Image 1: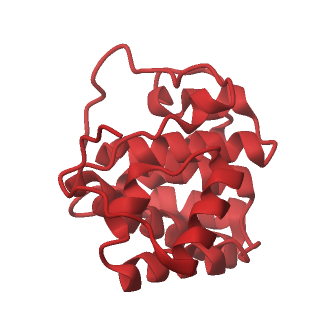
Image 2: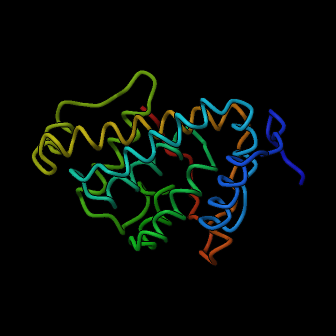
Length: 196
């Protein structure tokens, strides 16, 4: 398998490796190179898996909003793996794929509701270094989502930052999950969006 990762994938071995490989193939149809990269440090891999499993039990914020926010954060950071995985997740969760496909170009697109646009803007603002969240945007989201929903949305975006900021420097790129289930490619911005 040819890879472009900056750390060569390790051989995923042992009983736990067989389980992880089987789960990956069942879920995604393949074993992504990124799994082999993180296999070098199983405590980091398990920590990552554990966070994801715990976050999947959060239900104070709409799943579609959280998925779009994660994708927007991944796009801001430039994590093709996470963006592709988010698109695949939208497909498997039965979310609006026309909207999910447009997340990378959300500022140009007319498919999003005002709340979704606020969520996408918030995801980018949380992801910026330093964060650029405004009181006005936060207040609109607090009114729309409630306190628990806004806290969950923020934590979801922060978790995506952890994943994207791990994958990107390690050279873990798109595993083409969307292609494996016949989804059209993600939309690309026609121009470079200015960042605050």
